[in-house]
Image (tube, rainbow, N blue to C red; front, top):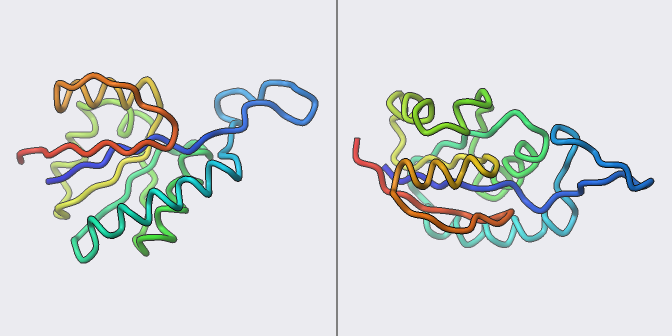
Length: 138
């Protein structure tokens, strides 16, 4: 199975008066949405014709990111619980029930970094809008 861990796009963190929006209130900026569309177009070429599934966190910014991925790939999006897309143990339980060969998971930091370490023993920066490919034996 191939797993793509995707961090949501670049966010707007403050309202028009400069007040913080808070974790659940943040949303993807127009620039972030455009960057995602470009990245997902190249991902489309890589996974075209394969069985694929999309999981996303319930937060608005990840659902926005999933919507762009859905528009580009034409695949349905499944909203998962926060723990299922932020913790490798729970994600692996979800993946055990998946028949598709490719799964895209849209999540948050620092959780993606931790999942990359737990699943592939790799460290690295995870900027907003980044895509990380991991091959998993099942």
